Amino acid sequence: MRVKICGITRPTDVDAAARAGADAVGLNFVSGPRQIDPERAEAILARVPAFVTPVALVTLQDAGDIPGDLFELLGRHWVSYVQLYGHVDAESIIRTVRDGFKPLIVGHVSERGFAEPIAALLDACGEHRPVGIVLDAFDASRLGGTGQPFHWPWLVEAREAGELDGWPPILLAGGLGPDNVAEAVTQTQPWGIDVASGVESAPGHKDFDKMSRLIKAARAAATNCE
Image (cartoon, rainbow, N blue to C red; front, top):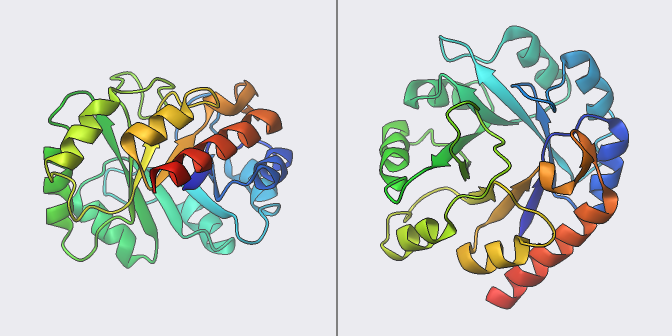
């Protein structure tokens, strides 16, 4: 069970996430109360310890490229994992892979048939596929980070129907916290989870106790599913 703590806004929260056992931390360059600028990101990235993977949430430009200032920042800090928003199609994913990045895409789940358009996108990418898929609830007013769970049985039904066969690893997102993560993992059995608001004391301020309890509960549930 891999755990990504997303929406890191302070260097001290990187330390806390690592101590709590996080595998990855997400830096949001996209939108919302957890969005940071490259200057703040410099200080955060300088604190990421060994064996904790930084993931940059980026909005692709109309041409499908990562903005130049972020491209340079990520290169300086050897950040290879990027979570894509904005103009995300097969062409932009392929370009991102060829630029040396490892992209994750976000699949918004609003209905039982959510898997079909994602599968079509994966097929169009050919051998330059994303390395992971973050499944989150859909909100027409937001690019991501809804803070609300989607209907988990849709994911279970899609897997049982074989609709997810051959997909990259799935990270479950949306409304997860210490009190419901065990149920979510037990039901959906994802490769990993992606959490932001569910482990905070205030928007953008991570809470060590909540992160620790969530990670322990998620891994215990995953072990019980084996």
